[in-house]
Length: 233
Image 1 (cartoon, one colour):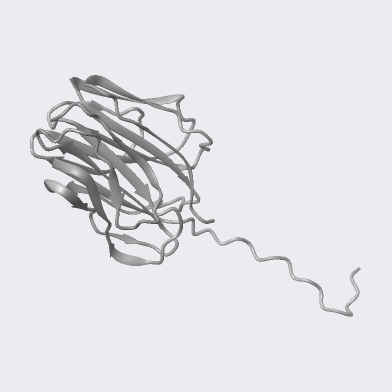
Image 2 (cartoon, one colour):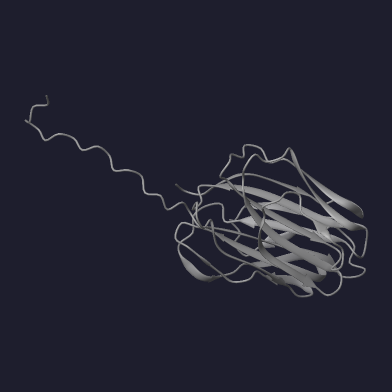
């Protein structure tokens, strides 16, 4: 079975808050893979995950002002919404996506989240993508002080669908988030990266990449037709 995207949702509240609610994903069935991305303008605040049973796929911080995390979960009777809790009121960004047709035993072939760099360009961590796999990747940043305006992002893989691109806009100390996926199967390759370019200067950044592994189940062979001229009883 080939991988397909089911749905995704994003939320970047305009100001500081102690929670970040995300609408439920539509069309999700038990067994789908859920990918959760969360970032906040703090490295000391405690984050409460929206559901139990999450697998840690990466954590990273940049300076003392930005933290990010990536988690996955096999869908099973999912709630009507997802809400991240934060011990201190700060700006945050959340995204969740659902994918179908993945390997039941090891749906994630590789995953990584690392600190990025200051400036306008980020490079996602290198991952190995299996034959027919998908790449999900993105970035969360904190604006450089004084860099006002809503940041938008582009990827070096121009054909990859952008699943999220949102930011607060209060001058300095803003948060931005952008997410893409490959939108289709990729050929097997190691060291796969993407270059992400921002319309504004970012003071801190964390970047991530996840390689999804397709379902390896082989369909049963088709029933053979009887040879011509042989009667069937």
